[in-house]
Length: 148
Picture 1 (cartoon, rainbow, N blue to C red):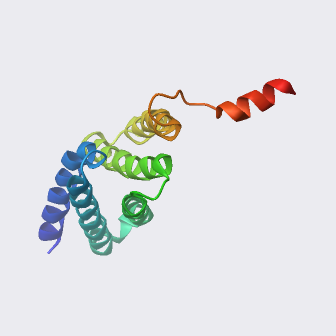
Picture 2: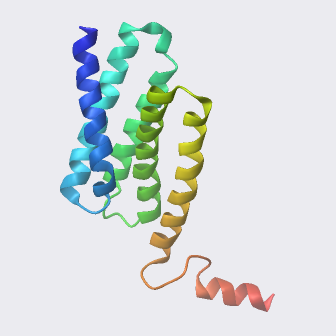
Picture 3: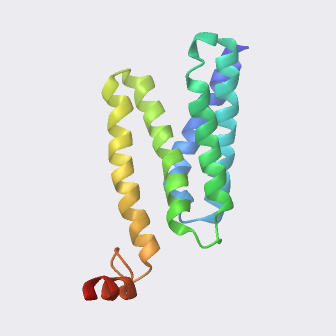
């Protein structure tokens, strides 16, 4: 039983890792990505049930799935920065999990998160600023603060 759950888990993880970069560009890819992350999270919980000593990973699996699903629900709702942070954060979790499984080192936990947060914040700021505008305070806010 564990072997079957693990095989589905690995396949879903591969799917999520492959689809993640395209999910911000294609609606179909995003839907497939969210489905892959949902399967990944469900099988992760199954693996935790079969291996109770891995229980600390259960909240990570749930948070990753919720981030991907919530990012998907925000599509077209005027919150592009938050959507990118949630969807991108779920992808950072997938990359982190892959590196932890492959290397097991502490850096595998810390490095993807540190780099991912910096990249996501920069991209979210650009997306929130809109096309052709630099990230930062709105022009009206900047003019008001310079008069003070």
